[in-house]
Image (cartoon, rainbow, N blue to C red; front, side, top):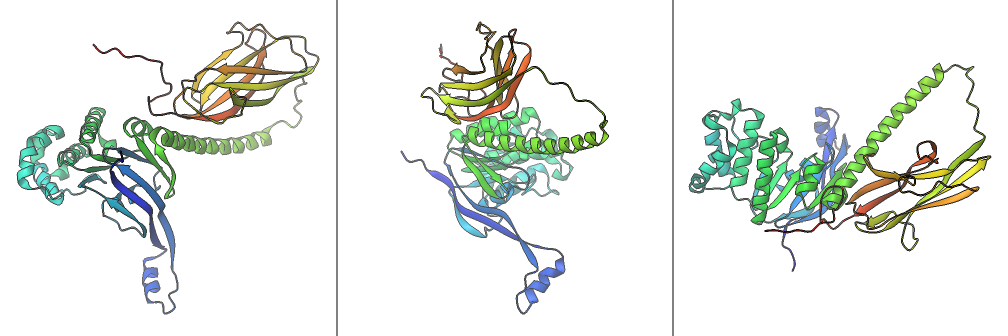
Amino acid sequence: MTREIAIQASKLSKTYRLFAEPVDRLKEALHPFRKKYHTDFNALSDVTFDVYKGETLGIIGKNGAGKSTLLKILTGVLTPSSGSYSVRGRISSLLELGTGFNPELSGLENVFFNGMLLNISKEELDTKLSSILAFADIGDFIYQPVKVYSSGMFARLAFSVAFHVDPDILIVDEALSVGDMVFQKKCFDKFHEIRSKGSTILFVSHDPFQVKGYCQRALYLKNGEVVIFGSSSEVVDSYSYDQESEIRAKASKAKQISDISAEIQEDKNAVSESSNNHHISITHARLVNLQGEEVSEIKTGDSIVLCFNYKVVGDFQGKLSFVFNLYKHNDFYICGATSVMDKIPAHAPGEVGEVRVMFKKLPLLAGKYKWRCAVNDEEGLGIYTEAVPVCEFSIKDNFEAVGLIDLNRSWEII
């Protein structure tokens, strides 16, 4: 059965003209040869997506990515420079805290004022007033001008009105960030309630766990462009990976500067360490499926084999053990083991060797992962050589669970 689309956008773009000085706008308007005095800034570029009725879509991206611009277009506040969109149903939006509220009026007066802006009759609001006030839970402040409200009180009242006007589409732009944990939980419970009635929710947040936990699909914007649009797990992992990469790049640049400084201060007469009389190195690592084909993307429940080759150079008389460690892309440690732990006898090596570790029905959920391989001494404690990160890979799931792993489970409900 075809699902009904609530919101559809096709190649939406928004371009602003930026002038260095206010007078440049007048110069451009009056110039006889239409000389340009502005530069174009593309807040949105060819953004295409759709949202189904009864679905929650998360929108993520850094500040300045174009999220608010997109929502303002969808709510009719802004006109796109090009492209088209359609919105089917009554929209209730919280784009900026306090939008649609008159600071001089009391909270109670603003309930009716906001309802009027949303084309809700006074009679309909009268029937819902007790529920609105109970959800807002701001006590006698409801009779005070909203200009004396704290940001949290403002949020409570704004959310309460938005939830109780029975919207077909609810749009929330980071307004939850001002609420306390109890109020946020209350709002998310309300999200579930209105979604179960068939309403559509567009939810902008900087919290990837909120997007992953409450949204079926997500849209990742970067510099006004769509990076990825798909399942919330896949999109959030892509966003988190990019964020971590930026952090690592900045840290690496800072370290390079620090290392250069340290080299300048280093004693020029320092003597380097003498080399060992043997050398062990990991020469190659790969991740393969059970057919021996190298893979970088698998599904939850697939079986894989981690393979790595090592080489021994020089006179070596000892025995070797082997190690694997598994990490998320952001260096969060998941698990690891040594061959000693698994009762595999220490290995007396030749010049070259290969290690294979099979993982049956890997239970990891969607995300990006990487490995560490190492060759240790026969006790499994001393490290001869290691390789990290190697065999980076991603996992896709069918959204049958959330978190890190998909536990093998059965249900009994009595």
